[in-house]
Image 1 (cartoon, helix red, strand yellow):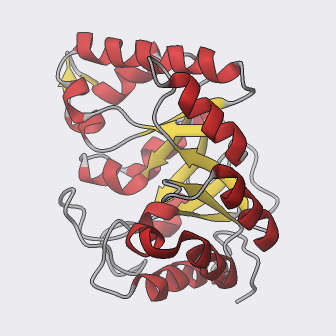
Image 2 (cartoon, helix red, strand yellow; image 1 turned 90 degrees about the vertical axis):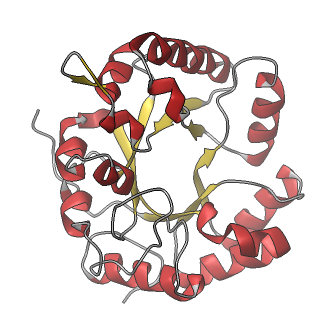
Length: 261
């Protein structure tokens, strides 16, 4: 599939898990620092005791967008509660993952897909979409020559958009740029981090100092609408690291931000 190139690079957003320790103490203050760095939007994680209305007002005051929300799939008994909260927050796309054990068999994958597909139906009633975020089990597990990720995608409602965590794809043993390119227009979000790509307990490092080809994964699929920085943990000061990530992407023309470099 040949996709048209972006006229301009996709905008840069921050996955708020990167600052979860700081946000537990003062989410509203942390959002101010994220805006000051120049990020265009956030992907929310928790509200840390704040009401959705208060957080939405803070985002609006700062001029920060909400590109997506990392929230559990709204299926089952908690669906209405999840959707009501996210609607008040202003979320339009909810992104979540399956657990590693849900890739232990093809039947388990199909059951997971059914749960996601039910979330699609529930979310549509609120005018929301569902997105899928990978870890590494999706790529490590193979059944009859087919990766679990490919099996999952075939089972999912085509309305499910994709958020490719390029780092966990690398940990899973695949080339994240090749995966990104293969997903076509369904891929709307990428998570970008760098490090040794050994496992879930990795410490993240500044772009260009780990094993990830950051320019390669960012340029792999021009259908991507959001370049999302995420640093799970690091030995560096996290605010310094997130500013460095911003500077790296924006100064190289890989992403657009609110502050020129």
